Amino acid sequence: MVDAEQSPGRGAAGDPVADNALSAVAVPGLAQGTAIVGATGMPKVSASFIWLLVLSTFGLYLAFIAPVGISLAVRVEQLDPQHPEYLGYIIGVGSIVALVSIPLVGVISDGTRSRLGRRRPFILIGSLIGFASLIVMASAPSIAVLGVGWALAQLGFGNALTGLVNVTADRLPESQRGRVSGFTGFVQLVAPVVGVGLAAGFVTNNFLLFLVPGLIGVALGLVFVVFARGDDARGLAPAARLSWKSVLPKYVFDPRQYPAFAWNWLGRFLVYFALSLSTTFTTFYFAQRAGTTIAEIAGLFAIASIAGIGAAAIGALGGGILSDRLHRRRIFVLIACVIFAAGAVILALAPDMTVVIIGFVVINLGTGIFSAVDQAIVLDILPERDVNAGRFVGINQLALQIGQSVAPITAPAFLLIGATGGQQNYGVLFLLAAVCTVAGGSIIFVKVTGSQ
Image (cartoon, rainbow, N blue to C red; front, side, top):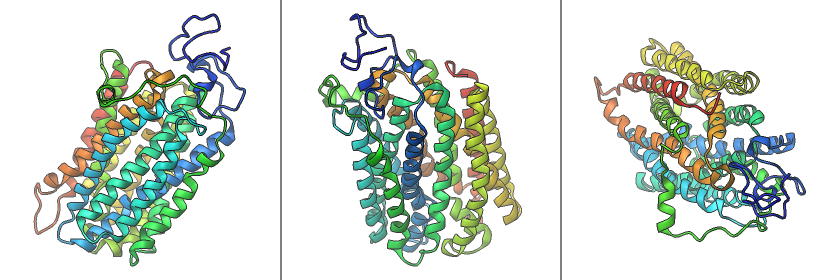
């Protein structure tokens, strides 16, 4: 057992600790006086720790993703109803902000030495910046200011949520990764639905539209910061001094050194590219198919989203728990992607709103399975977990952020393919999403070694 008084990189006899070994003081969230022998021998976390983590994840997603579900679309329609494609540009530019900031904040948090540990300060700061961004979006007088507000939301909420992911990389043993990823994946899907449901009742008041989900979400999001204890990082060895010269190389890695991580990154990028293609314009698609406005379709969209909760629950919780029990992960990812693709095809070819809702629910089922199991795979194969977990979690998040940046920006071009009578061709987006999702899942299933 490693003595908490020793330096993180040395064993009791002065020998280097094996790869992935962690000292007790290097692990945020450990109870005081607890020590561990290494990443493969990490003790299970407590139920209270898990529920604090899950509740904070739910809260931050509630505040962060509700604007994507309905609030941003409402504001775009208010500010420039003739150009719905501006929504894609806003979301894409915001993702670029997250793309640049998340790996940087991950590297900084790896080297942070504070009474609140390495991760909690960034969860706190990010939550506060995120809440300020909601005020900016609610009061935005133009599309440009609305875009600035969403960029601030990505900077704040994006880094706060990544801080929670960093905690899971620091703390979770392999035997709990699928289960906990299932719980957090489930709430990531449920939170936007709850947020849309809350926001739908306030579409005539911009401030309430953003701030009701925002206030509730941030309050819940900070419970981990307030109540998680035992991660004082002031006793850790001082971190290396950072400079632009030393930070920039940390945005990349050698895929030959970590091939499993690299292949999973590529597969994850394709899946999130597809997910962003199929979800960014969902509210506009619903409104076009129903022949009405987004504000008028908000109630129906909320009902459809609620219908997806059950599918998401089955996918995320079932997939996560089964992947732990069966010691299999990659096959669940492949199944998730095939299910998602089937839902996307149904949406593309749906003859009426009933079939549209069925396709929407099927997509939720596939997304739920993927969100839980892929996150567990990431934790299984994460390189340099002992000293650079934040860096590699940040690099892994680039797959999501680049996918979410590229998809909304390129989507308007696809919407014009075969468009007639002023109607956007959303079916092309859904069919492309189906192809990319199956490709991504196949890469992970075939190429990712080091996970079951």
